[in-house]
Image (cartoon, rainbow over all chains, first blue to last red; front, side, top):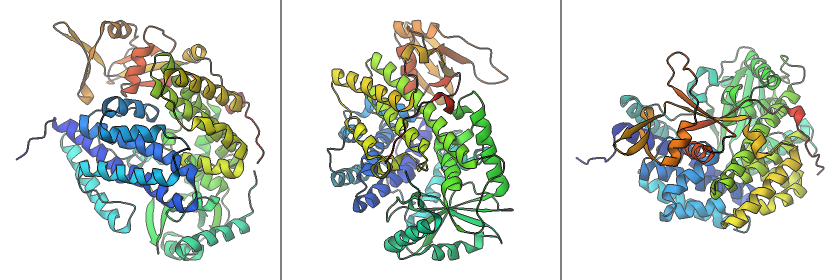
Length: 170
Length: 364
């Protein structure tokens, strides 16, 4: 038996959110970049690269420091990089957040793929919900983490419009 | 900024889907047939329908009918290699959505507090899919709950982004004043992009989310894209950061007319925290957030700022709130620190009416 050195609620909340971010938002950012590369849509690639840098920094802060809550999007880069900026993966996140148009789009895609691969490795095997074969396995993983969150008395991580009746049209 | 007619758009869409996936709109409709009732309308409204997108883009579709059950999440389908995300809504749902949007626009309060989950873009995108999407089957949709549904869709985006822009320029300048240069420059870059979204949307370019902004600028307003160029890369040296923030704020206000005076904006803003406590253990003062299991050590300066809060009486069973004015000088750094940790929210007294803006007109 291996002890997890953080209390159950914080572990479930931070890890559950990290799994969710890597599983869907980060996967979607990366997929958009891959698709954009062959179409010459470098504007999208530059924008997504910095969002991906910010998102991976957030995940690293959740996983390595169990930091919570997650601040609003406009403060996430500075929040996360204050803690993980000296970590090698954190340095790459910051470089992506700061990157301008002088960095070639193809290079950004390659760097983002490498970064996501390394961040995913910290979390174990997470299926890609954007692939046909990964859709249902990723739902199953999300369900596992939601059940753990519920068990320890924490709120889940799904967007509120997915789970709240009033989020639909309100 | 020009919009091709329906037949041309359908032809372009078919060509793109065919080139990327060897699929036509008719093939998609066949797969989705089980979701459609007689007389239901199918609207294509994502990036692919607006001449953007690529071979990995999903194809966003809204099915709308008199008795259609609304979907909470996109219903995912595959047509060969094309992923199709379907939202279902009834006519009454859409009427209600546009009416809510209209009401939100008429209220003086900020949109973010009046339109539910608008911050997640989903509802904004849905409004624009209906207003500017391509009807690929069934009768055209025209929500009847508001006089001009396309204007409501446009104005809601402009208002939402104007309120984001106000917050970005304020946070950027405040963060700069307290030496938080990464937060300052990140927010300054956001401000310029939010201003560009306002300009494009005012110029009748359908909203397709932040990720397509720069592709939109390429095709619709390349001269604006050039004005953005210097803001793409964030500087590191403090002196450069200071100039970056100043110039970004100046450009944002030139493009939109948004007020940017730091102190004046501060009078409209408050920092609001909930469930925060300060507890002394020996000589150490701790800020404690019991609900999230968080604890932080405070300095003497922090304690002075903490003491500057007001505590409105709690309503019902809600946790005690702490409120600081946005224009307070003693507590600005402390509150920004709490905000950066997600411990307080930034609340604005009023919204930014579209009529208050003077948006630069751009010709492609």
